Image (tube, rainbow, N blue to C red; front, side):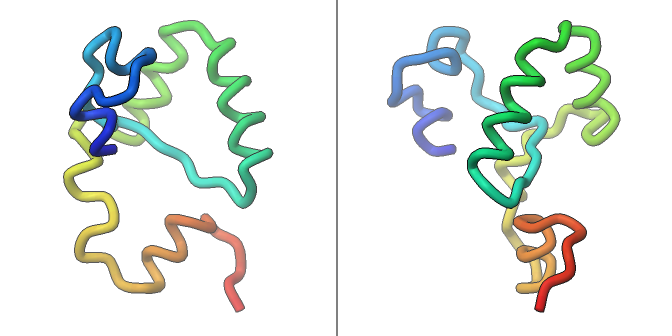
Length: 86
């Protein structure tokens, strides 16, 4: 997130000066995350906005709070979703 906010890497976020994290998902594997990302890229803008607003209606910058003041269990739940953790 630091690299995106400071535009240290060339690409979409630096080109369009995007510096807020307004939505994220967690996935078990990188492969699942890549499949989801490819699907989302095919969505039209309206659907993407509706998805963001369903989770973050104020478009708050989630990078300011993500991972802070969370218990170990809450961090695991963020990483692994609703899966049973042994």
